[in-house]
Amino acid sequence: MFPIVRPRRIRNNEVMRRMVRETSLSTDDFVYPMFIVEGTGVRKEISSMPTCFQESIDKAVENAREIHSLGIPAVILFGIPDHKDAEGTEAYNDDGIIQRAVRAIKEAVPELYVITDVCLCEFTDHGHCGIVSDGEVLNDPTILLLAREAVSHAKAGADMVAPSDMMDGRVTAIREGLDEEGYTDTPIMSYAAKYASAFYGPFREAAESTPQFGDRRSYQMDPANRREAMKEVALDIDEGADIVMVKPALSYLDIISDVREQFDVPVAAYNVSGEFSLVKAAASMGWVDEERIMMEILTSIKRAGADIILTYHAKDAARALGG
Image (cartoon, rainbow, N blue to C red; front, top):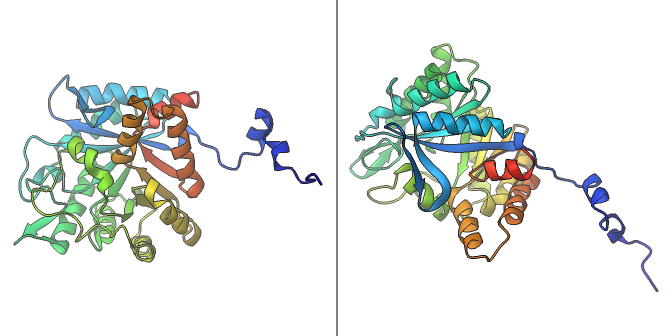
């Protein structure tokens, strides 16, 4: 009459719940994104991303110290230069905003692992991720510049480079460029399955990288496609990617899971700006418990198979975890 098997038996005590928990979060899982601008003493809150800032290098160094003190092992840097042009020349300027930021952070906090985003969109005056001709983003000329950018980041001291452009063959070009310059030990974390998502809106304010015409659907993936992601990931691994990333994370948990099942490499997932901002907006209205929903989202990304989570929640999550 009454059940013999009672799953609730191992749920009714917090100690037991912890003991049988299948997925655990750690600060070691997190990478914190940072937005670097020119100037001194600049710390400008991003209106669509509360608690996130555009920071000058001196303020970014202060932030890096705090991030490290919380036990977060790594940051990823995005640069906003004063000068933009059609070829994004500041992206591969050895004295550019990202290159100087890398040197300053590594000098101040050498234990913090510094990853750099490799793309042209923040550096071009048209806002696209590559060279544009007659309204078309050109693949092959772009990957040559991306390789130059990655090498300049490695020269500055970046621990890892992360190409986010979605050009075909860019991992090969970057790997060859790094190896030719002696940076054979610099790993590549490729944005392997990056979708043309509406969840990037707040980021484009933060990075000042909104396309001035058209959109990025000719090079970023169609959100409706699942099998295509496996092809993109396989190509990047064959070209030498050490870690592959799925972006965004929350609406693409199935893709994270598929990648984890099919490939034996570390998997990263980017909990992107729109996902972050939705939580912040709902919490500000009192509609959700911000800490609980933040931790539930991050746990779901980890449960789906991500080894590394790039997230704007990293500092708050580290504090919640006791960092």
